[in-house]
Length: 83
Image 1 (cartoon, rainbow, N blue to C red):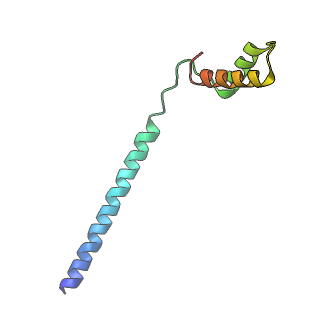
Image 2 (cartoon, one colour; image 1 turned 180 degrees about the horizontal axis):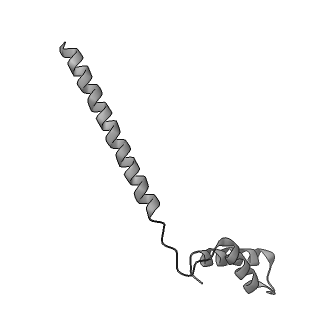
């Protein structure tokens, strides 16, 4: 009899803990999804940054490797908002 009561009590506690965890998870999802990340001021998309950097480096008389390196750095800076 005591074993049966304790088994029922354990099952009840486990269900209660599971319910609390699910409620906490739902709340956490709401908090994350309700606040979109703040946009970076002056940041560009990758396509916009690539086009702007290509225009800046057009006509330069450097090696292809040098231009490629400078383009990658330029794109990274523009995507982070550092023009």
